[in-house]
Image (tube, rainbow, N blue to C red):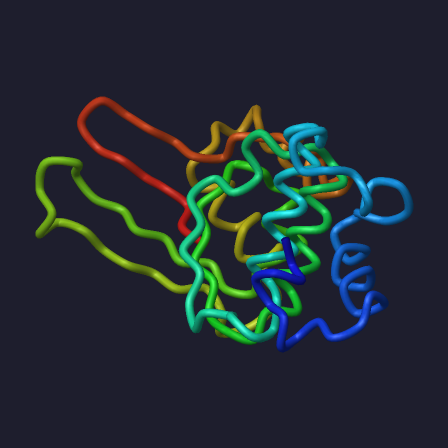
Length: 175
């Protein structure tokens, strides 16, 4: 796949194998026909294709990119996004992924049916993403949930929901 789609970039077998290895596709797996790959391995192959240097877009918009990814694929995606030279806008409930990838925290709040009531806040002035994330999460979580948040941020759990939704309004993390 990579050799066909990116022939100018991958002149040598070693170049192709290096790109595949970035996404955990090495050894026998790199030789396996696409039709025989599992869903998670196919996702990794597609990620290796998307992140080839000759076709990188300027902006990536990702909506829940870790849904249906296994742990290794999530780490491969996070590593690729950290190395990505363009802008990335991602929405995710996967706290561990957000903590690995994000630098800025953008919060858009307002009434669902009143777009003119939307407000946008950006947390980048001082500190790091995790600090802004924790500060915001504590404003939307009940006080009795704060210890769980602290534990989640310490251990970087794979799945946690820190988005608060109400019937009349919506508060979302947009990162």
